Length: 242
Image (tube, rainbow, N blue to C red):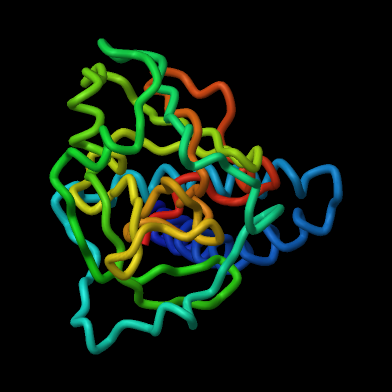
């Protein structure tokens, strides 16, 4: 066999080998998932890659769809969902939001101080990881306006929140500063009800429902996450953009 013929055959072999390997990759991956000692690590790496990719696709100026009032679900049909209790018994009259971390003005903020910021009302879709979705009307202050008011460090990477029902969650700073991310204190132009997270919750139409924590009590601006989120600690995606 001539040298040129041998080189051509070797190149064809490499091409076939690459194609066959690509065909085998899903099979090998499924086989790896069947091994208990490898399964958890593969899932974590898969979620990590998904979050990494989703964060890079996120566009701070891209708005979630908004809807006409005629498309709203009736308030009474808006599902109530929580991880523990529907009403943790917040004393709304004395409630404050404790702000800490990388801010110039830490301290306790009353609901009236949040309500004094420009109010935004938007009709957006709430999507639950359980498979249902509903269009609702939400009102509140932009989280970005509140962060500016408390003097948040513009180089900080994360926002974390704790809640009266012991729920906790975190956001990347780009999502926190998104113009549709609200500190929500009303629904359907009425004060937020206890079942829906009174007196203050997150409303983030660019995120899955479990990122939108209710019954807020603490907000921290930080460069490093101490803990990520309640459902994320059970294996769910952290970024989960829509």
